Image 1 (cartoon, one colour):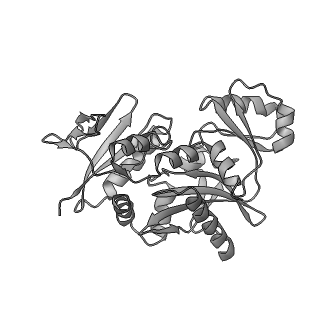
Image 2: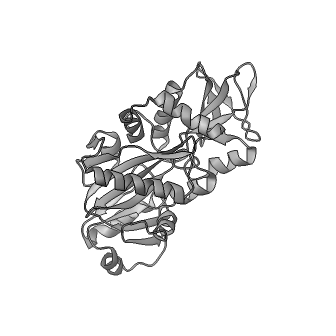
Image 3: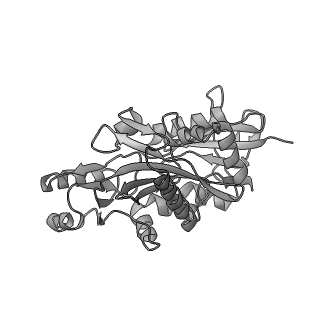
Length: 325
């Protein structure tokens, strides 16, 4: 049987470009070369190209997503999307591939766009009874009454860009004086900002995926940050403990898994997603949903895959087979 051609897309146009490239390279190294021919594809602001083993850049023809591999023209059977931020996580790449009828491993375009917009996603899920933090939304240029906002969400609160990842632009605000500087930091990442009450409890991250028509949840990871919250340094520079499985009761593990699967079903997701929760007074409160979670060696999903007794090779292969179905 002919090997399937897999384009592993990495990079993107956001501050998460380097993290995405790490994720993409982990996928390229892990995929089974007996079953798949693997093409690392970089989607960057300076151009889209296939990077050959000799580091030659072969440009992508955007009219049909084809490229030359040195001997022939390739159109991939499946795109394995590892782009964090735009255009991979916000639905733009998925919409483009849907138009070309090329299958891909992540959420469809609408679901990706919805979950990338924290404000819209939380607004939708609250209507289904999903517990979330009290929040307040502002757009750049809005006239603000800081006391009114703080009265609604309380202190401490989090000020964060609505459409950004890897904890870029997020601040924990503990006083009214710290509010405007935090807003300036968030507006550097996005023109829309979400302000949320700081929940008090155990922070949990959990992967959910579709396999053979079934929706399954991994064992959750407990996040213990050395910093005020799970910021960039905690995520990527080792300033946190990520404990899998989480040190919570069996009952709470089941509650988080059930809620994460319910969210996946409500949103009609595909591929692997990672949901973040804070368990406050025994109730999981959703923080956000990631549709292209990090897959680098430091990332949470690879740790959960290994904890479940799977290999990255088998799991990434399952995502491709699910996309081909």
